[in-house]
Length: 340
Image 1 (tube, rainbow, N blue to C red):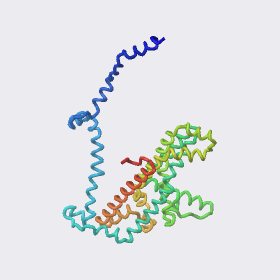
Image 2: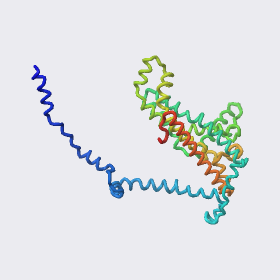
Image 3: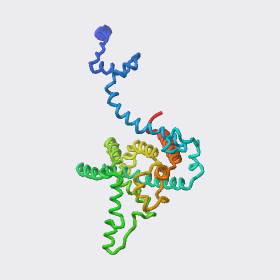
Image 4: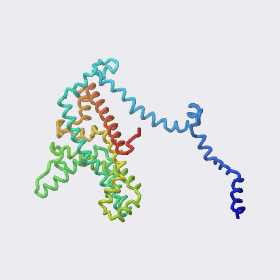
């Protein structure tokens, strides 16, 4: 009996160790593609030359139109005159920043309007794609869902010139709405050109144009939520509202925080083209924002240095908001736009 028990153990002890499985050609080729210790930089560049050539056009466009123009911020410290150029313009130090630090009335008015529009867009426009994505996700018919998505995406591809023209055709003094009200004997409603309705009009235009397009990211995030979570919540007695609160919204939290951080980075930019097209009827006191302030005082008014100073500060504020919001996202356990 003991011999029978000891025999397998002795056989196992005399067996040869298992031979390692040889790498396939694909794995061997993948290993050589990695950066091996001691491999020179020139060899790596030569090896990846096709990938670098493919990336070269995009890199050139990025450098030419995004990074090279940053050198023009030097005119924020000059009394810049276009006819004599940057080299011959007088250096004035921080004098152009006095409109910010001393509280120029026009600048403060533009800043106030910018902050009001920012608040309206964050509170009303930003949550709209989330609500729309959740509503579309509840549709059972895929054909109806695709049809609704296609209709909602279309306004995003229209320019602001066309969007403003459409709103004027519907809400203008001789538009569809007022024409119908006059025929019914109910008078007319002044929306286009009305000072009191201007900020609400801008917010509704942004919502109509961009809400459908922004739902793409939230629908993609909703598709990644496992259906088993909804089934488990239903078994536990959770209704549709509690499932949305405890399953859907936590599943969207990462993408919501990421988009909110990116929105804060562009916080002080509330739509130059949209506002400049409608600034005439309402006047600058109501419609002036930081972007139109830079345009009206720089290109139109000739205050190039002051406009560059305001634009530079605006960019630095955007960077600070992104870094701060990303740090807060890390405190809540989210990745944000980058990890430290």
